[in-house]
Image (tube, each protein chain N blue to C red):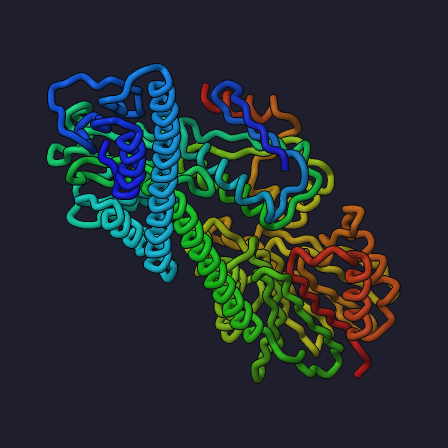
Length: 495
Length: 115
């Protein structure tokens, strides 16, 4: 124990009191030294002695019980004061450690807070860990969504297999571990003497660890505390980076979906064609997701007007893309193919491979209007619902005679002819209509659809269309539409 | 939607219960693909508990059927409720699948074919 100047000054006053009281010599014996006042008396035994923390108080030239009691009381007092001073020193040292950690964390936060991608964040963490702990190097290792990221502060010293094994060891220990080449050979690479390893806790069950290796003089208690604090900070940092990445992905996907929806909407006709003897209503309302509904009117000189309505199964970009392709093939086919069945056959042949590749299919209804005959020729590949209500009723569902396109390489749909004279109504919809659910989880269904069309059949095509959309909206009130809703109403009218 | 699987005479039986829509289709697609890529690409999908199927559900079944047939197996259906059967008939998809009244008949159709 080395005494401080303040302590020596107090002891000097104490020695003066004893010397005044007749003592010849006063000495403080510590483990490593002797502090003495008065005459020098090497080798002689003190007349009074009292134990002191880490040594003793000794007096020469005074003896007797009163002197001993006084010296003992003083020794106790000094011991008490020294203990208090030790406690204070310890607290001061702890405070300094804490201050160091706070400064280190501040430095780490400053260097990582602009890193919004996991890898640069890990790089900052590894670099700062090595610097703050005074280690030869540090490694941050994370396995995120089956991607392994091992980031070294300097030259790579560990491979992924070793890091995975170290993570397993730290995870099994349930706490920070300190490994040395000497005690646990085989776990560390040969060139590494010692490694301090801490697992990083992340959102979800991910594998992550932070390790520092090889510090001159070894890793002490402050290093262990500091690594623990850095690992906690690193966990929050990696979680933030991951959340940021997820948000970016969502945003990117949403932008793509918005773009796809705009492309889709631009493909749909802006307004229905004007055809003498035919009253036409057409509207398509997309649901929140990009759906696969499509419809078109194709009018060309000296050719019958063609109407198509289709629905590519599923949602998302793949459906939207297939819808665009089907739309294009039908439009091209309408230029030179004679009948709806031939057009469907062409789409089936052209798109079978593409549909098969992504295991999709499209229900498609194609019709030609023949004004001279006041008739519709149609072919239907799995499309539903299509409702025909001849003047005076009753309304009925027109069933498909072929599977949807994309399931088989050809299409067996045949041409069918319907009268579409004044008062006859043909309503071609997509399943977003009959499959609308209300809050009681009841489906609108076909029966309501048929009844509604029958009761509205004497109205104009626009009024029938508006009534159908209104009825569906009312029925599904409070239930956001799950699917696109497309409706075309063709009604024969007097010339 | 509730999904249960069991094996009968090396045929994978998948029982679905609830509404088979875009919300549940990805889960079913994963299961059908895993099963189709497994040791025996023979699947019976029991639709007895399915009250409603939309085009995403149909698409999932078509996908499963195609994967199984690519591996010389098949996906067969059984116990279609009336509304579901109606959707299959209206879209003519009942022509694409082999459909049976109950699970036993669907499984037997596989085992008969193996004899």
